[in-house]
Amino acid sequence: STRKPAQLFGNPDTNAAVGFANALLGTTTVAWCYVPAFLTVELATCMRQPDSLKKSLYLSGVLNLIVYICVGVVVVARWGFDVSDPIMFTPVWATIDQSIKKTLNLLLLIGNLVSYMLDSVPLGRYCQCMLKPNFADTWSAQDCFTYFLCTLPTFLFGLFMSIAVPNLFVLLAFTTALTVPWVTQIYPATLYWKLYVSNRDPALLGNNAPKITGLEQVGIATVFFIGVVSFSVCFAAAIEKVANAEVRGPSQIGCGSWIIWKG
Image 1: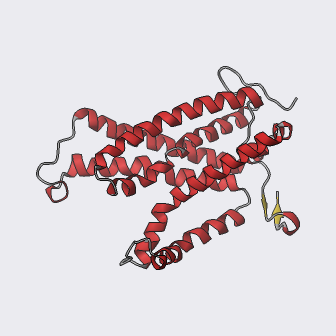
Image 2: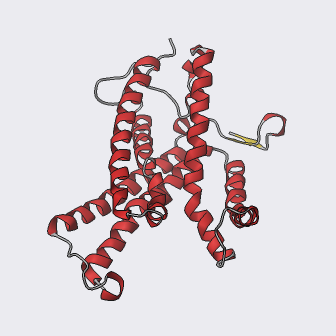
Image 3: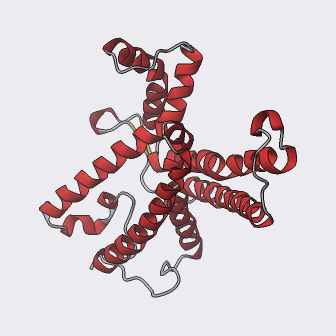
C-alpha cells in the first residue's frame, strides 16, 4: 500500500534527519498562515472604525486553528502521513477518484490566486509609490492600466524566480523565512514598542495617547519572541530543504522538451 500510517504522537519517519526536516517544514506552514497580516494596515486605513479590524483577526485565528486540525486529521487518516505539498506529488494521488482530484485542484487554484494576490499588495503598492507618487488611485481604466504597469516589475521578477529556481518549494521556504516572521511579528512588535513604550513622541501619538500596561508590554515582547522563533525555524527548514535531497524532492529548470537542468 502507498498509504503511510501516522502515529498518535511523534514523527513516523525512520530517518531522524528527514523526520526533523519535515517537522520544521510543517511548522513553516503555520507561519505562512500569517501572510494575510501583510494587509492589516491597508485594510485598517480603509475602515470607518479601524479598531474593529481586531474582530477579523480573532476570527481568522479561530478559522486557521479549525481548518488545520480538521483538514489535517481527515487527510492523514484518509491518505496517510506522507502527504506532500501539493498533494499531487504524493504517490497515493494516483488512487484518488477523478472527481476528488478535480475538486482539490480547483481549491488549490483558488487558494493560490487569493494568497498570491494578497501577498503582492504591499510590494506592488510600494512600486507604485516609487514610480508614480501622485497616482490618483481611482477605478478608471487609465488608472487601472497605470497601476498594472507600475506593479508589473514585481510580477515579472516573481515569474523569473519561479522559472530560474530549480525547486519552487525551496524558493517558497526561503521566501517564507525572509518575509513572513519579519513583516507580521518582529517588525510590528519592534515598531510598537518603540512608539508606545520607549519613545512616546507626542508629535506622533498626541497628548491623549493611552499608556501601555505591563500586560500589554508582555504581549509585545511575546509577539517579538514568537517572530524570532518563527524565523529561526523557517530558515532552518529552508536550509534543510536545500541540503537534504530526500526532503528537497525532484528539481529542474524548464519542463517537457526544453529541460535546461534536472537534478
